[in-house]
Image (cartoon, rainbow, N blue to C red; front, side, top):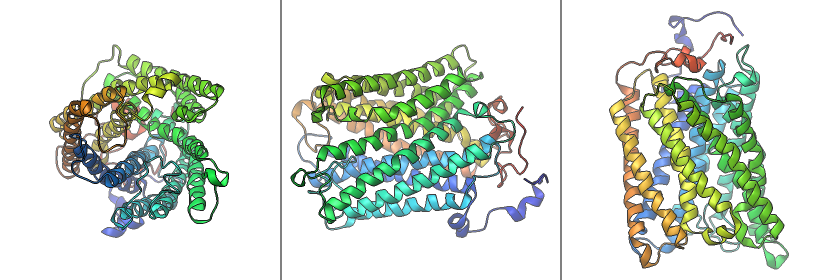
Length: 529
């Protein structure tokens, strides 16, 4: 590592390339982080517009606007895009930006691999979205693509979908290898593992989860490919296979996946709460242990998605208790967040508002998950809107609010310009109210028995559905305000100081850098005392 200190003036020849080539060929972690974040933002609007189509159809009972077949394509693609195209790339974008800055590294460990990991994504989603314009139509079997719906009865375009999933998985694995290598090998001298920021910890654990489960998903879609084109019968009962095998393989990937989508948000929230409570996170060690325990337990709960398939009683009991067990480390985290805020000198800037609502609303999602964990109750709730309410409470005010709060928290550091606080607060209140108006009624219609993924429903559910649709439209359009705030914070506004937030230099290395940080982050590694 060079010990020559670069001043800002002699930095020009190291700066970014000009024009388009900068973005195509970049190996700089900040550029790649920015690409990931803009990509996930674009996908948010594409996946969100599909949700708008779903909610417009469900505004009133009866078949209103679109064909049932197209409705199925919308539900499937909305799920796939939101999971693989919004939440995950946004977290990887934040990781790319922040991990080198938080651990005092000059860049990611494998910069060229980093570029490849990103450019695989537009290709994968280009393939997936292109199926909607083909004659047979896009995937229509739900984002969980259960066989035989996705094999025997699938449209011909399913092959494109399989290839697309493979490419997404490759992107995730390469990105994870890069993140693990960076964290383990490039920390500043003196930064032991137990001195790492919690966001870095959350990503280290998430990256291991990704490497563990993405090959399982690749295996599942490869078996589908074989069943469709090569005459095998992995999931075909007539040939000696078993459709339930698909569910087991899928959910062995799928449940760790849902933790992949929330753990980085835990890390972000921890940073924001300690900054705006002006006191260190309560119980740092227990937070790290809780993260680790959640990750380990996530591998033994998968069949709670399948209580109704006819498992042996012992299996149902095991998965019921293991699911309840995973609630304990999650509860530890919520307790520690509340304890961090307790008697802190709190202020309520936009990132803090999103972080506090994250803690409250994520907890609602957690408790509805505990209801679903109880086997006899799950027989009643399974495949109803109660499940939709549960996972949307975890994914929207959970993962998405975590991402949004992270963007508000760090954007002054990234751009050197302070975002508009008033507009930020308006964006928060619009999002907070509308997300609850959208998803809370779904608990009620679900408990009353309204099945999910149907374009039509019985008359008694009309009022709540109308309410949910109105909420969803307000939520969707309020994200346009977020786009405006982000663009404004890039282009003009008052200059941000290097520590941005009061006393932030106590909360991590990133606040010791200028705002915006130099193109090459730490040319000389800081010493951690």
